[in-house]
Amino acid sequence: MTQNNTPGGMLKEGLADALGFVIGALAGWQLGVLLGFDFVGTPGYGVPQIIGLVLIVVGCGLGRFVARRLLSVKP
View 1 (cartoon, one colour):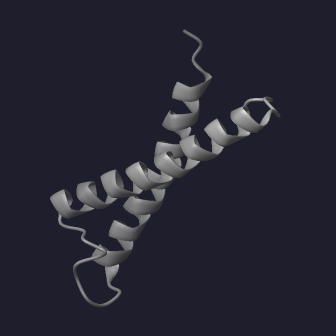
View 2: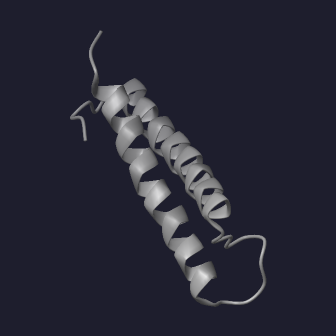
View 3: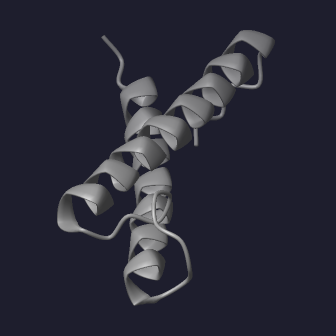
C-alpha cells in the first residue's frame, strides 16, 4: 500500500483496487470454466463449484495485488 494521502492518490488506489478485484475475479472465473469448475453457470454446491469459487476469490486477490504493483511503479 502506498502512503499517498492526497485525494488524487487515494482515488487512484481505490480505482486500482476496484479494477483489480473485478478483472481478477473475471480471470479466475474464466480459468475455472476452462478447467471445468464453473461456479456461476452450474447449479448446486458440489466440489467443482467450490473449487470454481476458490479460483474466483484467488483471482480477486491476485488482481488487486497486480493492480497495486502496477500503480506503485514509477516511470
